[in-house]
Image (tube, rainbow, N blue to C red; front, side, top):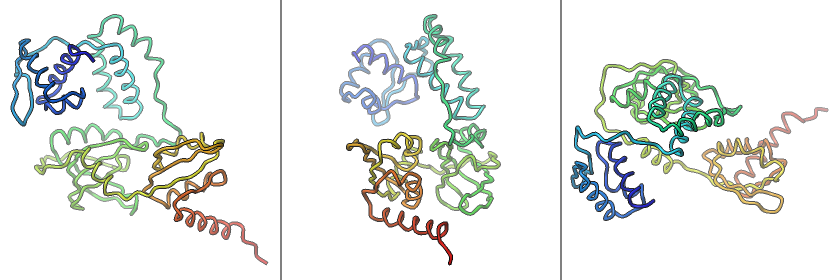
Length: 318
């Protein structure tokens, strides 16, 4: 990216938030802080009323408005692709809000870009896999996001899978994320006095109560990073016949897939799993065409499962 394009992009970034840190700009464009200061000075010399505060960041003076931003064809296509994901993987309310935003994006595009989006619309699709569950509870997404933005407490009627019980929870929402075909809510649970991961499809009823919480919670990114660090993961290495390798594509990521490499007529696959028990049962589905390299504990567990299977289903009485 040349300097003129970078300075224009920095100006757009400054418009996108109330305050932008110099370090954030440097990280985005992979430049030094000294270069950031020089680029900001160029904007100031061009008449942009910027306010800079040491240790805080830069902001554009209130009331200053810039002409509408124009999008490139590539950026417009990215918006269209994102729309397909939103339509398939979120609730009707979020999809409707995004579609409304897309009308505004299309409104400021040049004629060539508008025609391009029309022609591309039918050529991008996001299709749910057969093993992906329905988006049950997805209509809770917007109320949860509103509660997060307003720092309001949520009341949940939640079905706990491990205990098979319905419980009433009052929680302080931190954030939501999508993983393995389901939406999750991370929140501070007042009943358990700890942070909890709630599957949104197991929330039977949800209501925002008229109470604001004042506690400062970690960002969702920091929370997930911390939990990942705390979670004990076991490394697993297996050899899989190349003939069945393609059949594992839709499942391997659920088992902690990390990497793979070709070795002759086999594929060596490496995983980091949080459940050796779960991995052992998954391995049994294709074990006749695979070999366990490590760890020994997986060898032992698969052998135990096999012996129990033989005893239960193939024992002969005399």
